[in-house]
Figure 1 (cartoon, rainbow, N blue to C red):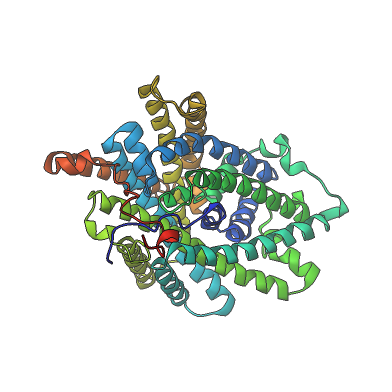
Figure 2: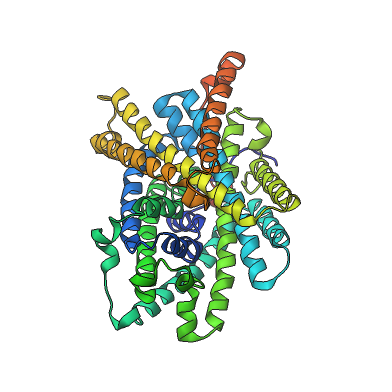
Length: 482
Protein backbone atom coordinates (compact mmCIF):
# COMPACT_ATOMS: atom_id res chain seq x y z
CA UNK A 1 0.00 0.00 0.00
CA UNK A 2 2.70 2.44 -1.00
CA UNK A 3 0.65 4.71 -3.22
CA UNK A 4 -2.80 6.11 -3.85
CA UNK A 5 -3.15 5.80 -7.61
CA UNK A 6 -4.61 3.29 -10.02
CA UNK A 7 -2.47 1.64 -12.68
CA UNK A 8 -2.64 3.89 -15.73
CA UNK A 9 -2.74 2.72 -19.36
CA UNK A 10 -3.23 -0.95 -18.51
CA UNK A 11 -6.54 -1.97 -20.10
CA UNK A 12 -7.70 -1.70 -23.69
CA UNK A 13 -11.03 -1.65 -25.51
CA UNK A 14 -11.54 -5.42 -25.57
CA UNK A 15 -10.74 -5.74 -21.89
CA UNK A 16 -13.13 -2.92 -21.01
CA UNK A 17 -15.91 -4.37 -23.17
CA UNK A 18 -15.41 -7.82 -21.68
CA UNK A 19 -15.54 -6.43 -18.15
CA UNK A 20 -18.82 -4.65 -18.88
CA UNK A 21 -20.52 -7.63 -20.52
CA UNK A 22 -19.22 -10.05 -17.90
CA UNK A 23 -20.67 -7.89 -15.14
CA UNK A 24 -24.12 -8.89 -16.43
CA UNK A 25 -23.09 -12.59 -16.63
CA UNK A 26 -24.57 -13.57 -20.02
CA UNK A 27 -25.24 -17.24 -19.21
CA UNK A 28 -26.96 -16.20 -15.97
CA UNK A 29 -29.18 -13.78 -17.90
CA UNK A 30 -30.19 -16.44 -20.39
CA UNK A 31 -30.52 -19.43 -18.05
CA UNK A 32 -32.06 -17.42 -15.25
CA UNK A 33 -33.54 -14.12 -16.35
CA UNK A 34 -34.91 -14.97 -19.79
CA UNK A 35 -36.33 -18.35 -18.78
CA UNK A 36 -37.88 -16.91 -15.60
CA UNK A 37 -39.42 -14.01 -17.55
CA UNK A 38 -41.01 -16.37 -20.04
CA UNK A 39 -42.29 -18.64 -17.28
CA UNK A 40 -43.82 -15.84 -15.21
CA UNK A 41 -45.33 -13.77 -18.03
CA UNK A 42 -45.73 -16.04 -21.06
CA UNK A 43 -45.14 -12.99 -23.28
CA UNK A 44 -43.62 -14.15 -26.56
CA UNK A 45 -42.43 -10.63 -27.41
CA UNK A 46 -39.49 -10.81 -24.99
CA UNK A 47 -36.90 -10.62 -27.83
CA UNK A 48 -38.40 -7.31 -29.00
CA UNK A 49 -38.47 -6.03 -25.41
CA UNK A 50 -34.74 -6.70 -25.08
CA UNK A 51 -34.02 -4.78 -28.30
CA UNK A 52 -36.12 -1.84 -27.10
CA UNK A 53 -34.30 -1.82 -23.76
CA UNK A 54 -30.97 -1.79 -25.58
CA UNK A 55 -32.10 1.26 -27.55
CA UNK A 56 -33.27 3.01 -24.39
CA UNK A 57 -29.93 2.34 -22.70
CA UNK A 58 -28.03 3.71 -25.69
CA UNK A 59 -29.98 6.95 -25.27
CA UNK A 60 -29.33 6.93 -21.52
CA UNK A 61 -25.59 6.62 -22.10
CA UNK A 62 -25.31 9.63 -24.42
CA UNK A 63 -25.07 12.20 -21.65
CA UNK A 64 -23.41 9.72 -19.30
CA UNK A 65 -20.49 9.15 -21.67
CA UNK A 66 -20.22 12.82 -22.65
CA UNK A 67 -19.80 13.89 -19.03
CA UNK A 68 -17.63 10.88 -18.17
CA UNK A 69 -15.18 11.88 -20.89
CA UNK A 70 -14.85 15.32 -19.30
CA UNK A 71 -14.45 14.16 -15.71
CA UNK A 72 -12.45 10.94 -16.15
CA UNK A 73 -13.39 9.83 -12.63
CA UNK A 74 -13.11 6.25 -11.38
CA UNK A 75 -16.40 6.90 -9.55
CA UNK A 76 -18.27 7.88 -12.69
CA UNK A 77 -21.68 8.86 -11.31
CA UNK A 78 -19.94 10.86 -8.60
CA UNK A 79 -17.91 12.82 -11.14
CA UNK A 80 -20.58 13.39 -13.76
CA UNK A 81 -23.30 14.46 -11.33
CA UNK A 82 -20.90 16.81 -9.57
CA UNK A 83 -20.04 18.33 -12.95
CA UNK A 84 -23.61 18.68 -14.19
CA UNK A 85 -25.72 19.24 -11.06
CA UNK A 86 -23.27 20.36 -8.38
CA UNK A 87 -21.10 18.90 -5.64
CA UNK A 88 -23.95 17.80 -3.37
CA UNK A 89 -25.55 15.87 -6.23
CA UNK A 90 -22.21 14.20 -6.89
CA UNK A 91 -21.92 12.91 -3.34
CA UNK A 92 -25.57 11.84 -3.36
CA UNK A 93 -25.09 9.95 -6.60
CA UNK A 94 -21.93 8.35 -5.26
CA UNK A 95 -23.77 6.98 -2.24
CA UNK A 96 -26.51 5.53 -4.45
CA UNK A 97 -23.94 4.03 -6.84
CA UNK A 98 -21.95 2.37 -4.05
CA UNK A 99 -25.17 0.88 -2.67
CA UNK A 100 -26.21 -0.30 -6.15
CA UNK A 101 -22.95 -1.95 -7.16
CA UNK A 102 -22.44 -3.47 -3.74
CA UNK A 103 -26.01 -4.82 -3.80
CA UNK A 104 -25.73 -6.46 -7.22
CA UNK A 105 -22.34 -7.95 -6.38
CA UNK A 106 -23.46 -9.34 -3.02
CA UNK A 107 -26.71 -10.68 -4.53
CA UNK A 108 -24.69 -12.94 -6.79
CA UNK A 109 -23.20 -14.77 -3.79
CA UNK A 110 -26.69 -16.03 -2.99
CA UNK A 111 -27.24 -17.09 -6.60
CA UNK A 112 -23.83 -18.77 -6.84
CA UNK A 113 -24.31 -20.67 -3.60
CA UNK A 114 -27.78 -21.82 -4.62
CA UNK A 115 -26.71 -22.90 -8.13
CA UNK A 116 -23.68 -24.90 -6.97
CA UNK A 117 -25.50 -26.45 -4.01
CA UNK A 118 -28.31 -27.58 -6.29
CA UNK A 119 -25.77 -29.26 -8.59
CA UNK A 120 -23.31 -30.90 -6.19
CA UNK A 121 -25.01 -30.65 -2.80
CA UNK A 122 -23.95 -29.10 0.49
CA UNK A 123 -25.00 -25.87 2.21
CA UNK A 124 -25.30 -22.90 -0.12
CA UNK A 125 -23.25 -20.70 2.18
CA UNK A 126 -20.21 -22.99 1.94
CA UNK A 127 -20.09 -22.50 -1.82
CA UNK A 128 -20.80 -18.81 -1.41
CA UNK A 129 -17.80 -18.63 0.92
CA UNK A 130 -15.63 -20.31 -1.73
CA UNK A 131 -16.72 -17.73 -4.29
CA UNK A 132 -16.15 -14.98 -1.74
CA UNK A 133 -12.52 -16.11 -1.25
CA UNK A 134 -11.87 -16.21 -5.00
CA UNK A 135 -13.29 -12.71 -5.49
CA UNK A 136 -11.37 -11.36 -2.49
CA UNK A 137 -8.07 -12.57 -3.95
CA UNK A 138 -8.88 -11.35 -7.47
CA UNK A 139 -9.83 -7.93 -6.09
CA UNK A 140 -6.27 -7.35 -4.90
CA UNK A 141 -4.68 -8.27 -8.22
CA UNK A 142 -3.73 -5.83 -10.96
CA UNK A 143 -6.65 -5.05 -13.27
CA UNK A 144 -5.11 -6.84 -16.27
CA UNK A 145 -4.96 -10.10 -14.32
CA UNK A 146 -8.66 -9.86 -13.53
CA UNK A 147 -9.63 -9.02 -17.10
CA UNK A 148 -7.76 -12.08 -18.42
CA UNK A 149 -9.80 -14.35 -16.16
CA UNK A 150 -13.01 -12.52 -17.07
CA UNK A 151 -12.23 -12.73 -20.81
CA UNK A 152 -11.50 -16.46 -20.69
CA UNK A 153 -14.78 -17.28 -18.96
CA UNK A 154 -16.68 -14.86 -21.19
CA UNK A 155 -15.47 -16.68 -24.31
CA UNK A 156 -16.77 -19.95 -22.83
CA UNK A 157 -20.12 -18.34 -22.02
CA UNK A 158 -20.51 -16.96 -25.52
CA UNK A 159 -19.59 -20.33 -27.04
CA UNK A 160 -22.29 -22.09 -25.03
CA UNK A 161 -24.89 -19.47 -25.94
CA UNK A 162 -23.95 -19.62 -29.62
CA UNK A 163 -24.39 -23.41 -29.56
CA UNK A 164 -27.72 -22.97 -27.77
CA UNK A 165 -29.01 -20.59 -30.45
CA UNK A 166 -27.81 -22.82 -33.28
CA UNK A 167 -29.39 -25.90 -31.71
CA UNK A 168 -32.69 -24.17 -31.01
CA UNK A 169 -33.18 -22.63 -34.43
CA UNK A 170 -32.35 -25.89 -36.21
CA UNK A 171 -34.88 -27.76 -34.08
CA UNK A 172 -37.89 -25.44 -33.84
CA UNK A 173 -41.06 -26.57 -32.11
CA UNK A 174 -43.54 -27.83 -34.69
CA UNK A 175 -40.79 -27.89 -37.31
CA UNK A 176 -41.38 -24.28 -38.36
CA UNK A 177 -39.00 -21.39 -37.73
CA UNK A 178 -40.84 -18.15 -36.92
CA UNK A 179 -39.81 -14.58 -36.02
CA UNK A 180 -42.99 -13.72 -34.13
CA UNK A 181 -40.95 -12.84 -31.02
CA UNK A 182 -39.87 -9.60 -32.72
CA UNK A 183 -43.39 -8.56 -33.74
CA UNK A 184 -44.95 -5.64 -31.81
CA UNK A 185 -48.18 -7.62 -31.47
CA UNK A 186 -46.30 -10.27 -29.47
CA UNK A 187 -45.16 -7.69 -26.92
CA UNK A 188 -48.17 -5.38 -26.66
CA UNK A 189 -50.22 -7.77 -24.54
CA UNK A 190 -51.01 -8.06 -20.84
CA UNK A 191 -47.78 -8.36 -18.91
CA UNK A 192 -45.59 -6.24 -21.21
CA UNK A 193 -44.58 -4.00 -18.31
CA UNK A 194 -43.44 -6.99 -16.32
CA UNK A 195 -41.34 -8.16 -19.26
CA UNK A 196 -39.52 -4.82 -19.43
CA UNK A 197 -39.04 -4.71 -15.67
CA UNK A 198 -37.69 -8.24 -15.47
CA UNK A 199 -35.41 -7.71 -18.48
CA UNK A 200 -33.74 -4.47 -17.37
CA UNK A 201 -31.60 -6.32 -14.79
CA UNK A 202 -29.90 -8.13 -17.69
CA UNK A 203 -28.13 -4.89 -18.64
CA UNK A 204 -26.96 -3.81 -15.20
CA UNK A 205 -23.17 -3.49 -15.22
CA UNK A 206 -22.86 -2.79 -18.96
CA UNK A 207 -22.25 0.88 -18.14
CA UNK A 208 -19.40 0.06 -15.72
CA UNK A 209 -16.35 0.31 -18.07
CA UNK A 210 -16.27 4.06 -17.35
CA UNK A 211 -15.07 3.12 -13.86
CA UNK A 212 -11.74 2.14 -15.45
CA UNK A 213 -11.30 5.56 -17.08
CA UNK A 214 -8.01 6.20 -15.27
CA UNK A 215 -6.69 2.76 -16.24
CA UNK A 216 -7.86 2.76 -19.87
CA UNK A 217 -5.27 3.12 -22.59
CA UNK A 218 -7.35 5.78 -24.34
CA UNK A 219 -10.41 7.81 -23.44
CA UNK A 220 -12.15 6.68 -26.61
CA UNK A 221 -11.77 3.05 -25.53
CA UNK A 222 -14.11 3.63 -22.58
CA UNK A 223 -16.96 5.05 -24.65
CA UNK A 224 -16.49 2.39 -27.31
CA UNK A 225 -16.62 -0.35 -24.69
CA UNK A 226 -19.89 0.92 -23.20
CA UNK A 227 -21.63 1.36 -26.54
CA UNK A 228 -20.34 -1.95 -27.89
CA UNK A 229 -21.38 -3.70 -24.69
CA UNK A 230 -24.94 -2.37 -24.84
CA UNK A 231 -25.33 -3.25 -28.53
CA UNK A 232 -23.78 -6.70 -28.14
CA UNK A 233 -25.89 -7.48 -25.08
CA UNK A 234 -29.12 -6.31 -26.75
CA UNK A 235 -28.48 -8.35 -29.89
CA UNK A 236 -27.15 -11.40 -28.05
CA UNK A 237 -29.88 -11.57 -25.41
CA UNK A 238 -32.58 -10.95 -28.01
CA UNK A 239 -31.27 -13.80 -30.17
CA UNK A 240 -31.11 -16.14 -27.18
CA UNK A 241 -34.64 -15.19 -26.08
CA UNK A 242 -35.91 -15.73 -29.63
CA UNK A 243 -34.13 -19.09 -29.92
CA UNK A 244 -35.60 -20.37 -26.66
CA UNK A 245 -39.06 -19.25 -27.74
CA UNK A 246 -38.61 -21.03 -31.07
CA UNK A 247 -37.44 -24.27 -29.46
CA UNK A 248 -40.08 -24.40 -26.73
CA UNK A 249 -42.96 -23.04 -28.80
CA UNK A 250 -45.02 -19.88 -28.19
CA UNK A 251 -47.88 -21.84 -26.63
CA UNK A 252 -45.63 -23.31 -23.94
CA UNK A 253 -43.69 -20.21 -22.84
CA UNK A 254 -45.98 -19.43 -19.91
CA UNK A 255 -46.05 -23.03 -18.68
CA UNK A 256 -43.63 -23.49 -15.73
CA UNK A 257 -43.47 -27.21 -16.42
CA UNK A 258 -42.42 -26.65 -20.03
CA UNK A 259 -39.83 -24.07 -18.99
CA UNK A 260 -38.39 -26.21 -16.19
CA UNK A 261 -34.80 -27.18 -16.97
CA UNK A 262 -34.53 -24.70 -19.83
CA UNK A 263 -32.48 -23.72 -21.69
CA UNK A 264 -30.24 -26.69 -20.95
CA UNK A 265 -33.00 -29.12 -21.87
CA UNK A 266 -32.66 -27.89 -25.45
CA UNK A 267 -29.03 -29.00 -25.43
CA UNK A 268 -29.76 -32.25 -23.57
CA UNK A 269 -32.38 -33.31 -26.11
CA UNK A 270 -29.83 -32.96 -28.90
CA UNK A 271 -26.49 -33.84 -27.32
CA UNK A 272 -27.24 -35.77 -24.15
CA UNK A 273 -26.57 -34.89 -20.48
CA UNK A 274 -22.85 -34.12 -20.63
CA UNK A 275 -23.05 -30.79 -22.44
CA UNK A 276 -25.68 -29.33 -20.06
CA UNK A 277 -23.43 -30.33 -17.16
CA UNK A 278 -20.54 -28.45 -18.76
CA UNK A 279 -22.84 -25.48 -19.32
CA UNK A 280 -23.71 -25.58 -15.61
CA UNK A 281 -20.02 -25.30 -14.74
CA UNK A 282 -19.67 -22.35 -17.11
CA UNK A 283 -22.72 -20.79 -15.47
CA UNK A 284 -21.06 -21.02 -12.06
CA UNK A 285 -17.82 -19.59 -13.46
CA UNK A 286 -19.77 -16.79 -15.15
CA UNK A 287 -21.36 -15.79 -11.86
CA UNK A 288 -17.93 -15.65 -10.20
CA UNK A 289 -16.46 -13.46 -12.95
CA UNK A 290 -19.49 -11.16 -12.71
CA UNK A 291 -18.77 -10.84 -9.00
CA UNK A 292 -15.12 -10.06 -9.74
CA UNK A 293 -16.09 -7.36 -12.25
CA UNK A 294 -18.64 -5.76 -9.94
CA UNK A 295 -16.30 -6.01 -6.96
CA UNK A 296 -13.72 -4.05 -8.96
CA UNK A 297 -16.27 -1.35 -9.80
CA UNK A 298 -17.37 -0.92 -6.18
CA UNK A 299 -13.77 -0.83 -4.96
CA UNK A 300 -12.92 1.92 -7.45
CA UNK A 301 -15.87 4.02 -6.35
CA UNK A 302 -14.65 3.86 -2.76
CA UNK A 303 -11.10 4.59 -3.95
CA UNK A 304 -12.20 7.76 -5.75
CA UNK A 305 -14.26 8.95 -2.80
CA UNK A 306 -11.36 8.27 -0.45
CA UNK A 307 -8.92 10.13 -2.68
CA UNK A 308 -11.20 13.16 -2.58
CA UNK A 309 -11.53 12.71 1.21
CA UNK A 310 -15.29 12.42 0.94
CA UNK A 311 -14.88 9.17 2.89
CA UNK A 312 -11.86 8.17 5.02
CA UNK A 313 -8.64 8.17 3.03
CA UNK A 314 -7.95 4.55 3.99
CA UNK A 315 -10.24 3.62 1.08
CA UNK A 316 -7.83 5.35 -1.31
CA UNK A 317 -4.97 2.97 -0.52
CA UNK A 318 -3.66 0.93 -3.46
CA UNK A 319 -1.18 -1.88 -3.88
CA UNK A 320 2.08 -1.37 -5.76
CA UNK A 321 0.31 -2.95 -8.74
CA UNK A 322 -2.29 -0.18 -8.65
CA UNK A 323 -5.21 -2.21 -7.26
CA UNK A 324 -7.56 -0.32 -4.87
CA UNK A 325 -6.85 -2.38 -1.78
CA UNK A 326 -8.80 -0.16 0.64
CA UNK A 327 -12.01 -0.31 -1.34
CA UNK A 328 -11.49 -3.99 -2.15
CA UNK A 329 -11.14 -5.01 1.49
CA UNK A 330 -14.23 -2.98 2.35
CA UNK A 331 -16.25 -4.79 -0.30
CA UNK A 332 -14.94 -8.15 0.85
CA UNK A 333 -15.92 -7.35 4.44
CA UNK A 334 -19.46 -6.30 3.49
CA UNK A 335 -19.99 -9.37 1.31
CA UNK A 336 -18.70 -11.68 4.04
CA UNK A 337 -20.99 -10.10 6.61
CA UNK A 338 -24.05 -10.44 4.37
CA UNK A 339 -23.30 -14.09 3.56
CA UNK A 340 -22.79 -14.88 7.24
CA UNK A 341 -25.91 -12.98 8.29
CA UNK A 342 -28.08 -14.64 5.66
CA UNK A 343 -26.81 -18.08 6.67
CA UNK A 344 -27.25 -17.27 10.37
CA UNK A 345 -30.95 -16.45 10.02
CA UNK A 346 -31.40 -19.35 7.57
CA UNK A 347 -32.84 -17.12 4.86
CA UNK A 348 -33.37 -18.25 1.27
CA UNK A 349 -30.26 -17.32 -0.77
CA UNK A 350 -32.47 -16.70 -3.81
CA UNK A 351 -34.33 -14.03 -1.83
CA UNK A 352 -30.94 -12.41 -1.26
CA UNK A 353 -30.39 -12.50 -5.02
CA UNK A 354 -33.77 -11.18 -6.14
CA UNK A 355 -34.05 -8.41 -3.56
CA UNK A 356 -30.56 -6.97 -3.94
CA UNK A 357 -30.47 -7.28 -7.74
CA UNK A 358 -33.82 -5.48 -7.91
CA UNK A 359 -32.40 -2.73 -5.71
CA UNK A 360 -29.45 -2.36 -8.07
CA UNK A 361 -31.71 -2.22 -11.14
CA UNK A 362 -33.83 0.60 -9.71
CA UNK A 363 -30.76 2.52 -8.53
CA UNK A 364 -28.82 2.30 -11.80
CA UNK A 365 -31.81 3.31 -13.93
CA UNK A 366 -32.41 6.26 -11.59
CA UNK A 367 -28.74 7.27 -11.76
CA UNK A 368 -28.56 7.08 -15.56
CA UNK A 369 -31.75 9.14 -15.84
CA UNK A 370 -30.40 11.76 -13.44
CA UNK A 371 -27.13 11.81 -15.36
CA UNK A 372 -29.03 12.64 -18.57
CA UNK A 373 -30.55 15.62 -16.75
CA UNK A 374 -27.06 16.58 -15.56
CA UNK A 375 -25.77 16.52 -19.15
CA UNK A 376 -28.56 18.86 -20.25
CA UNK A 377 -27.76 21.26 -17.40
CA UNK A 378 -24.06 21.17 -18.26
CA UNK A 379 -24.88 21.89 -21.91
CA UNK A 380 -27.01 24.89 -20.99
CA UNK A 381 -24.35 26.19 -18.59
CA UNK A 382 -21.51 25.82 -21.08
CA UNK A 383 -23.40 26.96 -24.17
CA UNK A 384 -21.16 29.07 -26.35
CA UNK A 385 -18.04 27.90 -24.52
CA UNK A 386 -18.12 24.18 -25.27
CA UNK A 387 -16.22 23.30 -28.43
CA UNK A 388 -17.06 19.58 -28.21
CA UNK A 389 -18.09 18.22 -31.63
CA UNK A 390 -21.82 17.42 -31.87
CA UNK A 391 -22.48 19.11 -28.51
CA UNK A 392 -26.07 19.69 -29.67
CA UNK A 393 -26.53 15.92 -29.50
CA UNK A 394 -24.30 14.87 -26.62
CA UNK A 395 -25.43 17.66 -24.28
CA UNK A 396 -28.87 18.36 -25.72
CA UNK A 397 -31.08 16.13 -27.84
CA UNK A 398 -29.50 12.82 -26.82
CA UNK A 399 -29.76 13.38 -23.05
CA UNK A 400 -33.29 14.76 -23.47
CA UNK A 401 -34.37 11.56 -25.19
CA UNK A 402 -32.45 9.59 -22.56
CA UNK A 403 -34.25 11.40 -19.76
CA UNK A 404 -37.62 10.53 -21.27
CA UNK A 405 -36.63 6.91 -21.84
CA UNK A 406 -35.18 6.60 -18.34
CA UNK A 407 -38.22 8.12 -16.67
CA UNK A 408 -40.51 5.68 -18.49
CA UNK A 409 -38.28 2.75 -17.55
CA UNK A 410 -38.17 3.84 -13.93
CA UNK A 411 -41.97 3.99 -13.75
CA UNK A 412 -42.30 0.54 -15.33
CA UNK A 413 -39.62 -1.04 -13.12
CA UNK A 414 -40.97 0.39 -9.85
CA UNK A 415 -44.51 -0.48 -10.87
CA UNK A 416 -43.56 -4.10 -11.46
CA UNK A 417 -41.18 -4.67 -8.58
CA UNK A 418 -43.44 -7.38 -7.17
CA UNK A 419 -42.67 -9.49 -10.25
CA UNK A 420 -38.94 -8.92 -9.87
CA UNK A 421 -39.11 -9.88 -6.21
CA UNK A 422 -41.48 -12.78 -6.71
CA UNK A 423 -44.04 -11.44 -4.21
CA UNK A 424 -47.68 -10.42 -4.43
CA UNK A 425 -48.65 -7.02 -5.79
CA UNK A 426 -49.73 -5.83 -2.33
CA UNK A 427 -46.54 -6.94 -0.54
CA UNK A 428 -44.84 -4.20 1.48
CA UNK A 429 -41.46 -5.54 0.34
CA UNK A 430 -41.86 -3.84 -3.04
CA UNK A 431 -41.84 -0.45 -1.29
CA UNK A 432 -38.56 -1.18 0.48
CA UNK A 433 -36.47 -1.08 -2.70
CA UNK A 434 -37.33 2.51 -3.78
CA UNK A 435 -37.10 3.59 -0.15
CA UNK A 436 -33.53 2.28 0.07
CA UNK A 437 -32.53 4.22 -3.05
CA UNK A 438 -34.11 7.41 -1.74
CA UNK A 439 -32.48 6.98 1.67
CA UNK A 440 -29.06 6.47 0.07
CA UNK A 441 -29.53 9.64 -2.00
CA UNK A 442 -30.64 11.63 1.06
CA UNK A 443 -27.71 10.30 3.10
CA UNK A 444 -25.37 11.58 0.39
CA UNK A 445 -27.00 15.01 0.43
CA UNK A 446 -26.75 15.19 4.21
CA UNK A 447 -23.10 14.17 4.16
CA UNK A 448 -22.34 16.74 1.46
CA UNK A 449 -23.93 19.41 3.64
CA UNK A 450 -21.78 18.31 6.58
CA UNK A 451 -18.65 18.54 4.43
CA UNK A 452 -19.65 21.95 3.12
CA UNK A 453 -19.75 23.50 6.57
CA UNK A 454 -17.19 21.41 8.48
CA UNK A 455 -14.62 20.73 5.76
CA UNK A 456 -15.08 23.43 3.11
CA UNK A 457 -11.78 22.61 1.42
CA UNK A 458 -12.86 19.01 0.91
CA UNK A 459 -16.26 20.12 -0.34
CA UNK A 460 -14.71 22.55 -2.81
CA UNK A 461 -12.60 19.76 -4.32
CA UNK A 462 -15.46 17.27 -4.78
CA UNK A 463 -15.25 15.59 -8.16
CA UNK A 464 -11.86 17.06 -9.00
CA UNK A 465 -9.62 14.24 -7.75
CA UNK A 466 -7.98 13.05 -10.95
CA UNK A 467 -4.33 11.95 -10.90
CA UNK A 468 -1.58 14.06 -12.42
CA UNK A 469 -0.10 11.95 -15.26
CA UNK A 470 3.32 13.37 -14.48
CA UNK A 471 3.22 11.90 -10.97
CA UNK A 472 1.52 8.59 -11.80
CA UNK A 473 3.66 6.73 -14.34
CA UNK A 474 2.18 4.57 -17.07
CA UNK A 475 2.73 0.87 -16.32
CA UNK A 476 3.98 0.26 -19.82
CA UNK A 477 6.70 2.87 -19.32
CA UNK A 478 7.66 1.78 -15.81
CA UNK A 479 10.67 -0.38 -16.90
CA UNK A 480 12.24 2.55 -18.74
CA UNK A 481 14.83 4.69 -17.02
CA UNK A 482 15.53 8.31 -17.85
